[in-house]
Image 1 (cartoon, one colour):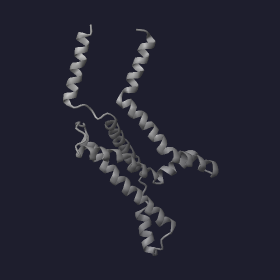
Image 2 (cartoon, rainbow, N blue to C red; image 1 turned 180 degrees about the vertical axis):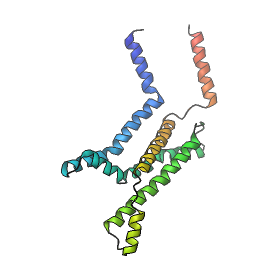
Image 3 (cartoon, rainbow, N blue to C red; image 1 turned 135 degrees about the horizontal axis):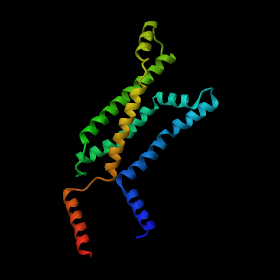
Image 4 (cartoon, helix red, strand yellow; image 1 turned 45 degrees about the horizontal axis):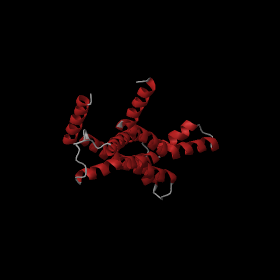
Length: 192
């Protein structure tokens, strides 16, 4: 077997691997989801006196990333509904952990996004508030939860990857796995 045939065979196995396909989908999903933030940061750094990194971090702190987290965990809930409806028979490893992660991401993303947006409204003065109420609300909504946003985003990415992988490769049942193993063994023994 020539090196070209071996290389082509190895490449084909690599591309057909479920994790490889999911990583490729993850890459394009991240490019698509961050493209508005990337372009907005470039325009801000060009039009305003600020650096690209400051504009990018400002966009990440702006709360838009929490909209992405809710969208990212949606495939897991679709997988969960299919599992409950009995359309998926495979056993998924770590399903309960990913379920807890998805709830944390959903609730944390919603609360963080609302917290940030309410804080922006209080700071902007769009709503008429008394002096005491404005001071109280300004203090209440002045905390920076950027680190929590990063954690929520990473957890959402894990949940998305898990759901996308199992959506593309739902796994074999025990009987299918045994049958395919027996067929492969028969082919090895009797094909010579």
